[in-house]
Length: 139
Image (cartoon, rainbow, N blue to C red; front, side, top):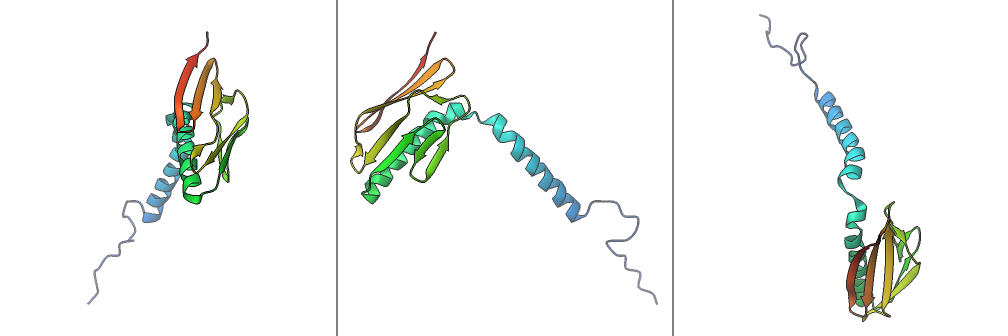
């Protein structure tokens, strides 16, 4: 008596193997990861939020460690200790400056101006953090 069981890999069956399916999913994920972030998120729109969050985290770190934090704002980006934020392509620094934060907050009132084309983004900071964010369009 002969065993009539068929193998799942018998000749003539149509379909894709698990390896082929995983390869297609992997390649699709790589392609989308290269294309989507650049088209969906405009970093110049989210830059004020990122900068404000950086200052807030620096204030918290200075308070919790009892050590002053120095944030340098330069042409290539923002340096805060070991952390570095590269400026979006269309945003430049009007004047390089630095902000020193200790456990009580920002040490001295400061104004930081970023430019994006004809627009200026002005952060006014006092001892209690950011007091004003102005978005000024120059004619």
